[in-house]
Amino acid sequence: MRSIRTSMIYQQLAAIVILYAISSTLVFLLIGSYLQDKFDADLAVWAETLTELFDFEDPEADLSFHNTFFDQGFPGDEVRYYQVWDTRKKTVARSLSLYGADLIYPELEGKDHIYVDLELPDGKEGRGLAFSYINAKKDDLSGKESENELVFIMACSQEWLDTFLQMVLIALAGIGGLLSLGSLWVIPRVVASGLSPLHIIAQKAKLIDAASLEQRFVVVQLPEELQPIGNKLNNLLERLNKSFVREKRFTANVSHELRTPIAELRALSEVGLAAADDDSALYKACLRDAHDIALQMQNLTTSLLALTRLDAGSIKTKVEEIHLNTLLDKTIQNYAREISEREITVTIEGNENIILTSDKTLVETLLANLVSNAVSYAPIGSSVYIVVGKNSEGMKITFSNPAGELTERDLDDMFEPLWRKENSRSDNTHSGLGLALVTSYCQLLNFSLYASIRDGMFHIEVKEK
Image (cartoon, rainbow, N blue to C red; front, side, top):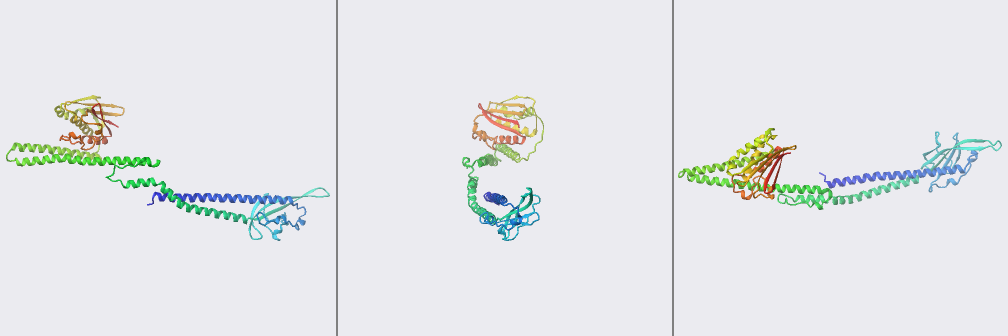
């Protein structure tokens, strides 16, 4: 595949050659046209001078007139020719340079004058000016004037003009050749210099791998055209780096979450096996604890599977009308026991009759995770506030509970799978997947999600886009 550098070199070379060919052709045509006009103008001056110097009152006498003046070189050292005819195409006069030969008789066809290309007696290519001339003669006795029409042709070789144009053509071709050779040397270096920022970006990009995602492109050193690309690449590297960090953290969190219940399950099974014959009460207690741990692991794997399906987009939505307040009350009732045990006060404010058009199952699961998160992480004896509203933009629901040990720095991490504050790691009832599921559910339902910490309270806001 041809590189950008090669394509640019070829295109610029082709453009230079085409432009030079067009411009040199125009120059050649302009020079040729100017010299031809100048040549024709000189012929016209010569013809005017000839008609002023000679008055062919007696055509027979003019046949023997030797006009040595007009046999001199013109222009340069070129020989000039002229010949004169009457209306019967009878030669009235000719220049000595013709040596008795004849020029072609011009057919004026009613025109005052014409320029003609012709072959001269010496075999050279020439150019002539032919025109008609009215010869007036006054009778000495009667005083009357009589007129007779004569046809003139003035000719001269234009070999010097053709030679000069050939020299111009050779010079233009030589300049074109030198220009092409110079372009072959200059253009690759100019293109290489212009593309050097791209080369730098490419070389630096080659060095980036999973272990060096913290590298960034220095945008201020890039040309203006490449700065948006540099910014985009830096943003991409930033997202990739965060994704790798989250992936590593997720792997570590999964290992941590599964290692503890597995170890406990193994220990319980060993104790249960040892006490199977001696203490049936201990045996039952071990089995009960093992059952609770198995449920915990099942909930963890179920949540992970749901998160995977959400991220893969394999869950289809079913749109229907939902009474949001009724669904919210039902969800809170499901957590009545935990609310009572933790002595949490739940206060619902806002509209009491909001109709939402969405997937009921997914919205119910979304509300369950938000209620569970608010109730579980609120300090014992504190209050949880739920504000439900709807305006022209759509539904909005906000969950608020005391922030506790949460800080602004935690806002970027708390929606990652299996993330939990370090001090909450000892709580085996939660795995840290709730808010990650909330994020995926919001994306699937086309809801926006926003978290903030204000005045010591942690707020999660969900609203329709």
